[in-house]
Length: 233
Image 1 (tube, helix red, strand yellow):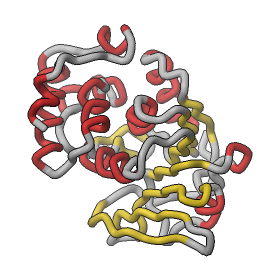
Image 2 (tube, one colour):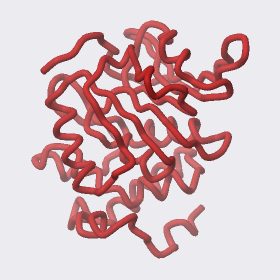
Image 3 (cartoon, helix red, strand yellow):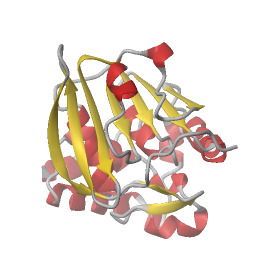
């Protein structure tokens, strides 16, 4: 795995190479983050490379840019956070464990970082966010990075996007008390859903839809913001 960090960096486009930063937002700092994720058991080289090239500092407030490549969740306003890089890597790796996916739903756009990682790994990303100011900012960063395969809109995450279903995969960045049936309904048979479940005590779970229901994998303890209904403008 160390060979990944020895390979020349190929940025997705010029917008990525122009946004690489210096000092605590430099490529060297991103490489150290990737080393930490590898030490924590992340082995999917495509996911690691997406994290290696993506300028996470663009997705948070400039005042916190020096902390962008810590392996921790950070506040983005409106009581929400940008997810911990290890969690993003874990969820994305599990989602792609059975091979490439064409169409993925990202529930809880937030900063847009998870959608940006997915955009480098799948054909089309549909992302929904219930808090409009967060969505507008995320759209600006995604546009800056020329991620034209991300389609982000304001919507209640519990609804998903029925008009675009079925999805090959769904990733959710907020924790409901139980898995929403609406999201399971929007998966194709064989499709994968990864999300936290629970209240004060949460676990990360992966679900695979079957002809008669779904199978379930427990992926470890996590702590996410609660999944809420309704739109905030």
